[in-house]
Length: 130
Image (cartoon, rainbow, N blue to C red; front, top):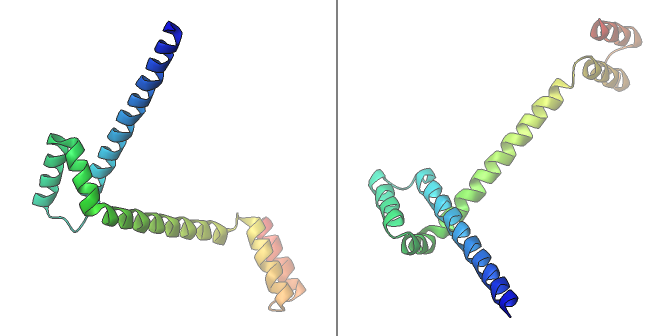
C-alpha cells in the first residue's frame, strides 16, 4: 500500500505544481495587459498592479471579471496587426523576387502579355544575368 500512497502523493504534488505555474502565467499575462492598455491612466495602472501584487488571487479574479473582454479584444487586435505586418513583409519579399530570376520572370510576363517584343525580352534577360 505504501507504493500507491506515494504514487498518489506524487500525482497530487504534480497537479499542485501545474496549478501554481498556471497561476503565475495568468498573473504575468494580466500585468502585461495592464501595461499595454492605452485606456487606463497611470494611476489606474498603479492601482491594478498594487492589487495584483498585494492580493494576487483576488486581484487576478477581479481583473479578469472586470477587464477580461477588453483583454481578449486587445489580444485579437494585436494578433490581427501582427498578421497584417507578416503579410506585408511577405509581399515585400515577393516583390523583390530574388534577383535575376525575378527580373527574368517579370520580363517573360511582359513578353507573354505582348508589352515587349522578343528582342527587348532578350535584352532584359541578358541585363539580369550580367
